Amino acid sequence: MVNVGIIGLGRSGWELQGAPRSKMADYRVVAVCDQSQTRLEPIAKELGARTYGDAQELIADAEVDLVVVAVPGKLHCPLTVAALEAGKHVVVEKPMADTLAEAEEMLAAAESSRSTLTVFHNRRWDRDYQLLKTLVCRGELGELLTIDSRVMTYGPEWTTYGVPEFNPTWRIQAAYGGGFMADWGPHLIEQCLDLTGEWPVSVTCQLRSHLWATEVEDYFNIRLVLPSGLLITLEGSNNARLPLPRWFVVGREGTLVADGAWGRWTEMRIRRSMGDVTVDLVPQDVGPSSGARDYDVGDELSDAFYRDLGEALSTGRPPAITARRGREVMAILEAARRSSETGQTVKPQCPKDSYRGCDETRA
Image 1 (cartoon, one colour):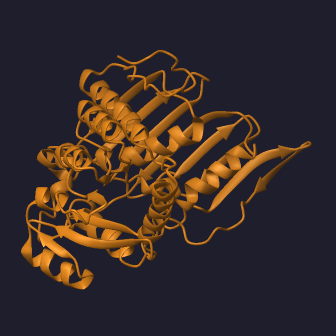
Image 2 (image 1 turned 180 degrees about the vertical axis):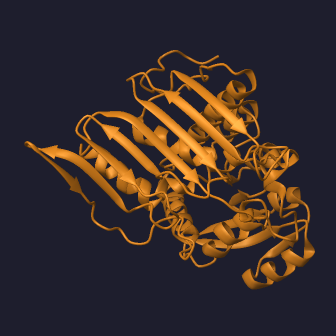
């Protein structure tokens, strides 16, 4: 049994992590912390958990084994480091930190404490991504030439996703680490690192504030060049009334496309040649897709993330999403921001771990 303490009871802390954990046999939420008493008290009563108004007091709670840091990104580093230094395991929301330097500090604290630190990249378990990965690993497309990975939406719900007891519009405020790239960029980058196993040679990025934000971006376009020659485009927009496909992947043997509409990301088709005949292949249906407006995939992804983490904690193996992977995502995000600010192509700082195209040791 893993005893959990949650810092931050917003959309992620409560809806994606707290409530689902209360239904899993291997986890028990024993402590919760939030600055809003009107949110804190009823949730604590429902869980039978102790309440804290001060995050440091929750971290000091001797019964807590695992601390969930589910607050805006600007606060991730100090709370995560404090929890690790107190001997706790930590789940921190994505993006891992506000800067790469903070991610380095968090990684060092995890290695020093020998506690497990993982980042809530729950979309590693998206059904569309898992289906794509299976098809690529089976060689259905042959050698990959280009990958386009996009999330394109339209509407004010993104700007008001925060809970009313805190700050519904924090996602479009720089002070809280908001922005569409901070929201979706980590997921798209992590998926591509997992899929390719290559470290980018270069990163080129453009960020724009068009319709919904002035302090942060509501659109991003990132181009990654990999050492194999594979070109990856990662694009996110909250301005698209009509979306481009969620996935458009070109290989030497075939091309894959997944519809861009919410709820239809797993409706994939592959066009390839068989002999002298060009055919369309439709992968077997895998059920409701992530992202459907009439289907809440949040619990499903959270359960998969926490099942993996529970097994990791019980066996001593690393979780699927390691702290190093979180740091690698931050390195690419920081390179992307630097590229957008300077108008230049940037080489992201290489990780220590072995990637194709990144043999040198980072500074």
